[in-house]
Length: 92
Image 1 (cartoon, rainbow, N blue to C red):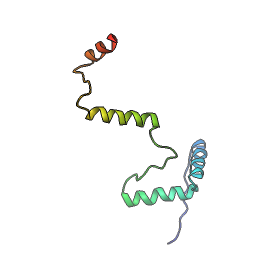
Image 2: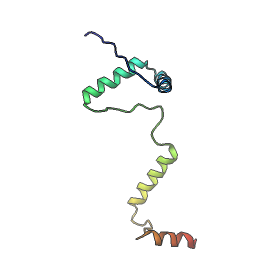
Image 3: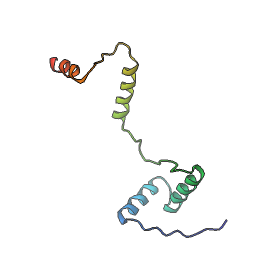
């Protein structure tokens, strides 16, 4: 299989930030672009997200876990409308 040269115009700041990210991930710019293109062709879609950190921080993840628990708790206090919720909050 032969190789081809691909020239891409990028914003200078974007290129710098991408190179720093890919270096942190142990990839060269060329390798990262090849990964993206191969997965795109294989999946016929934008295929994946590579990140140095999770999309949500731990505080957000904990809030999501708590919301799921409350949603499944038949004893959890519920309100029929926002007015009732704020009335109870203001009473405290």
